[in-house]
Amino acid sequence: MLFQKTAHELNTLLKAKEISSEELTEIYIKRIEELEPRINAYITKTHELAREKAKQVDAKRVKGEKLHALAGIPMAIKDNIQTKNVLTTNGSKMMANFIAPYDATIVRKLKNADVVLLGKTNMDEFAMGSTTENSYFGATKNPWNENCVPGGSSGGSAAAVAAGEACYAIGSDTGGSIRQPASFCGIVGLKPTYGCVSKYGITSFASSMEQAGPMTRDVEDCALVAKVLCGFDEKDCMTLDVETPDYLTSLGKSIKGLRIGLPKEYFEYGIEKQTKDKVFAAIKKLEELGAIVEEISMPHTEYALRAYYLLAPGECSSNMACFDSVRYGFRGGNMVNVADMSRESRTLAFGRELKKRLMFGTYIQREGMIKDYFLRAQKVRTLIRQDFEVAFKKYDLLVTSTTYAPTYEFGFKQAEPLRVYENDVYTASANLADVPAITIPCGLVDGKPVGMQLIGKWFDELTLFRVAHAFEQATDFHSNIPVIGGEINA
Image (cartoon, rainbow, N blue to C red; front, side, top):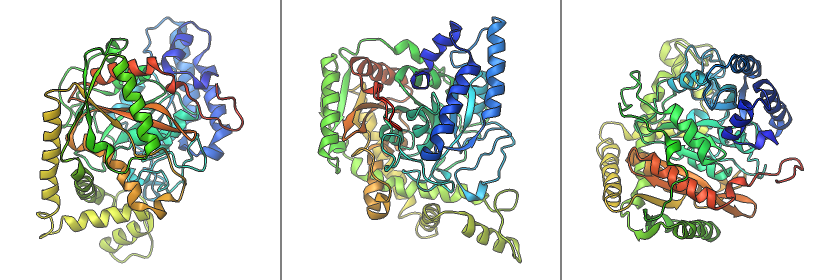
């Protein structure tokens, strides 16, 4: 079925004129119409825009114009990324009617590649959450098991790709929000090195950690999309003016002799046995392919989660101050002054999880608190970064589990809130240290996907893609497809 194919496979069919972009777009639109009442991966559907763009791409192809490999292929974008003249809600009541007046830099780049945008995907409100249960527009279901969460905050993007409602999607990752839902939904997800991808036009959660990245069916697609997203942007002072390599050149190369570190601390914090077994079996496969895997210590890993949940809410508290209901956003009624209006509007428009993080972040930045909490967490962040610096003097990359377990059922967060937050211990360190990380499928436990995470050196996505692709080609886990509505899992 075409909606189960990768972007590079679809590009081959389009170039051979075995199918048109218009026909392909209609297949995806039909798929969305069939599944969305159950999956709820999208907040906004842009089907008429998609049809128009597909028609334009087909016309260019008929004229013989040179087209990007992603041209005419339907995809989706997380709803915290500004998309001109399209509803961009951040999954919040506060922005439920906000039409973006401009394109984020990465959206502009994708448009220049002539992609077909199917819509904006569901997410935890303002990217704060790891289940996509915190969306004002309702929870997204995991295509592998509709009683389970798809992960978050980019849960809509992950579910759309896994369910065949988009060929690939764009997410954002502040503490694991690409990698965790990609793992839960059995797809590939990359958080690039901090500074590789422009944040201009992406609603800020924690500005010093977040990066947008691709969520795809396989590693080749991930490399293809990452090449489009990465690059210097004068509108974002945190992007670095370094040359973006062609990530596709790393695919197909042997990994024999590569040194891979296995941080023992990542397997000491509550990881479930079945998940650990799947990840270690995957690591064994890397060894069979010629990689040298050795156990190492990352001694400050145990402090990563605490540092993350001090720094991220602190930055969030500052970034969210602009949502004051003055210039845009939801506004309550019967207010007597601006301060009253802002307070009441935020009370009515913000969800429970967002309020909790905002209050905590504001508290730790109070006079008398910032030194003991926020600034101390910054020092811990430096120690965590130094752990990676030491490790990368000897090893080419690191391997870990992406999460401590496969996806879990709805309501688990309410029953075990701390256990849900603990999942971030596997992913947040990469954000704190600014290093790139990718998750790839490495098996199933009780019919639910398990992900293996590879963590690379700064700006060395090439090695991540090289190893991830070698593993993928030696296994068939990326070919597993969720059974939805009685479909044949083929």
